[in-house]
Structure formats: C-alpha cells, structure tokens
Amino acid sequence: MKESQIQIAFFQWISHYPRLRKSCWATPNGGTRNAREAVNLKRQGVTPGVPDIMLAIPSHPYHGLFIEFKSENGKLTDSQSKFIDRLTKDGYKCSICRCWTEARKAIQDYFPIPLLEV
Image 1 (cartoon, rainbow, N blue to C red):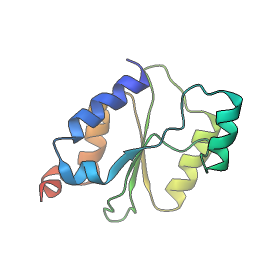
Image 2: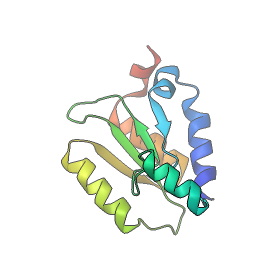
Image 3: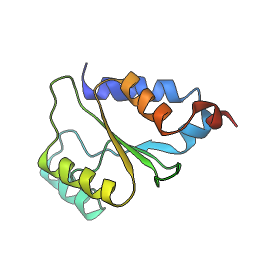
C-alpha cells in the first residue's frame, strides 16, 4: 500500500471521532513539484522532514503526537530522522506507522479513544 493510501484510510477512520479529526491534520510535504512551486512553498515555510500527521492534543507527558507514514519497505530520510529526533527531545511523541491500523494503535496508546468522544 502506498503512503498516500495509508493516510487516506487513516483519515477515514478518524472521521468517526470529531474531536480527534478537528485537532489532527496532514502536512503536505511530499509529492512531486516543479521548481517554481517548490521555491514558493519553501518561502511559505514548508520544511523538509516534517512528519505527515500532527495531532494537536496534549497527553501527559507529551505536547502532541506526530505520525510519519511509510510504506512496507519505506525508509526515513535523513531530514525526517533529524526532525523526529528534535520533536522527541522537545517533548512530542512521534510514531512511524506502516499501515493505518498502526496509526490507530499509536493514538490509542497515546490516550484512550473514549476521551475523544466528549
């Protein structure tokens, strides 16, 4: 399964949890772009290595949860590894997930899902 397909399946799942969906978004760092668009996005603050998903709900002792999706054989880039290391040192939980169910488990381990239904 491609990373984009995994991410789509993940967002289909979280759509059942309104609080979770309202506090979770994707960072469009991937994909192929022409040089002009890449320069424009860089000026707008797009940063290499930022994980795919941010969940902006703190859960002690973390400030939030970042998820990086990778296909079965996908590997982190150097910029992704460095960014994830920095986030972890700054108090964020980071998970690398190879399918949407791993992302679901990462969220369930981060905090109990019933809390999201409130």
